Image (cartoon, rainbow, N blue to C red):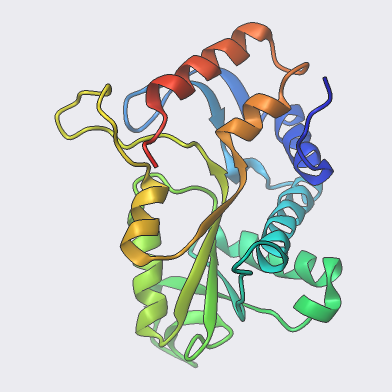
Length: 236
């Protein structure tokens, strides 16, 4: 059966699989859970792979900005240092290619890990954030700590964070404080949504992966991934 994913998602997923960025097997996560799949957005470092992920971000952002009851409106794409920097800058370039009339003047910014104490100084590189609607682009949300730091920096500069876009939503619940994985728990994305009242979009979800790899991955890998989804699916 043909995948129901849009062609651009299929292309992105194929690039991830063909280049070993999405892998199946046994992988220990920071949470100590053993995952049957692993996705490393940091491996999109080759020119053709950077094009693949930046186009996928651009399509995701364009869809969010042009569809649904509350279309996304933003002025700046912000990439938290360090992984977010090439993602934000390349996504802005591809957005302008997809729809120059709408996105031709969209800007990018990113932060420094340490403030510059000479020249123009400061902690932000690129477009000034004051009074602007800011879209954060990054690879994943694990515990949410890095995203909270980025939001705080943007707000300190006078910007308004309107949304976050990530490469993958694992749809996975946070570990229970008492270690009981059978308890309903929200995801890290869900916690950020509730805490800040902003939408979070993903290029791919775990549901997308399971649908998109049928006929590509082995039936055993798909079954294990489906079982993992059932066991650790978030309550939000």
